[in-house]
Image 1 (tube, rainbow, N blue to C red):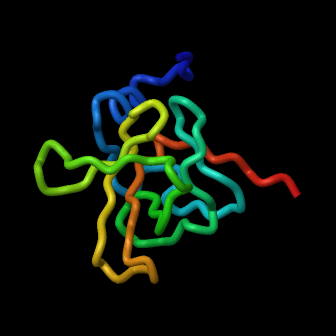
Image 2 (image 1 turned 30 degrees about the vertical axis):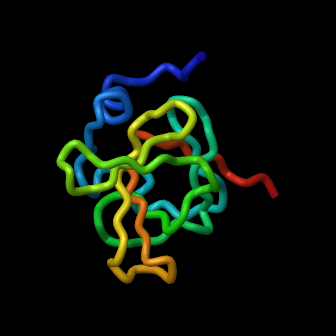
Length: 121
């Protein structure tokens, strides 16, 4: 399978399961109409309709596109990691029970793991 070329920072996040600094990512305060895809393989992950501002320091989405991500227990054995279902690249973590949205779910995603594609009108 052919993947997109990643910067060293993107590799640190996606391949080595790193985390970018809070409030440093380009999509944390970004709210345009479109879709978010995996930076490594271009698989569709989230829509702009599911994005919300949680003030946690990373882009937050209340839901993902069906079957686009896989949840797995993080190496810390506490959090649930989310990975791209297609390329298995690390995206971030999912949290439940915080009360931010009706779904009570927050997909906390590294900006460096995703790419925004604007909807064409």
